[in-house]
Image 1 (spheres, rainbow, N blue to C red):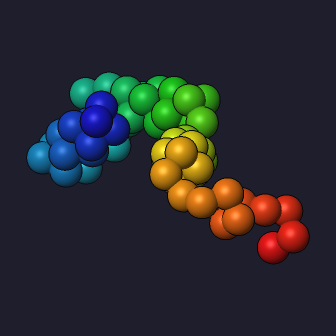
Image 2 (cartoon, rainbow, N blue to C red):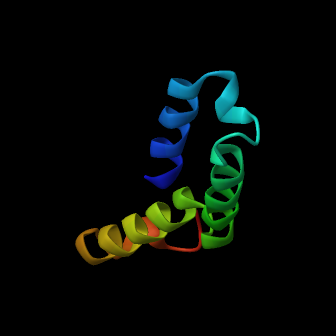
Amino acid sequence: MACNVIDREIQVHGAGGVADDFGLAYAWAKSRSLRLADGPDEVHRTTVARLKLKKQSPRWIYSKDK
């Protein structure tokens, strides 16, 4: 969410948003690096989905033969 807000502010400020005038480029870089450090969102979603499906699906779907 922070990246989206900062990105919108950069758009509003135009060229000044990517310059050092407002510090938005620095804030965006820091928030983006924190997002990368958190880990990939798709991996988290896939893991949660597998756990949920495993509870509801028959066992033969998750057999190691397939």
